[in-house]
Length: 324
Image (cartoon, rainbow, N blue to C red):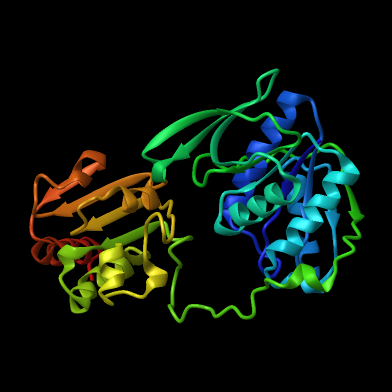
């Protein structure tokens, strides 16, 4: 059996979950095993069950424990540990989000098992091997997993979600028998961003700004461009550290990981920590006055020029084309 942990927040999930389920289903088919899922979140998460069936899940467990509505990694790890003890799955996996990596790290420590994070490929067999991202995505590592069950997380924006309905489907309640000490670490409150409009995670177009933007005022032209394109604005770590953008807008290894149709990088040199965050973009347009900027090597399109001239000209051209 292959078990996928489903990360939900108030009954909602991100594309990362569907990507993990897609890899889980492929792995289940290769190993001739059923695909199952654990929804150990808020009671309203039960509304996701029909969607899980569409991704090949034939069996899903619900805990219905309201205490799990708030993120509690030790409690979630205990639920998974009990499920492993009861069902003996061959593989347990999750999306390589902050929570997915944290949870499986707790689980691996609790059960003294090996863990492979940020996997891009999985090769079952006598030697169960994985290919995974290391050093912020700058290199690929091939590793062999020896412990049972195999624990791994699926790298973000690598596997496109592919629905394939299960032939059969059943829902079961799973009694986790959690104790108060399991909730010693728990999220106390979540504050929604005050940002209006489309989020970085969902935007089809993202306009990012870095050191070259110069200051917070310089982001106004980027915001205008993003608004015209129905997109969102992000920033490099330099931009957020300097207070030019909120930290929630940071794109990179320690910030948001985006996968838009188009990423327009303005005044960003292209440090590997930033590139990791936008590697899922289908197309990258780099605007930089330094022709030697490393980001040009990774760009699909490039403009060598001062963004203070290029962005207004681009905005004007779009408005003219639309007849605004």
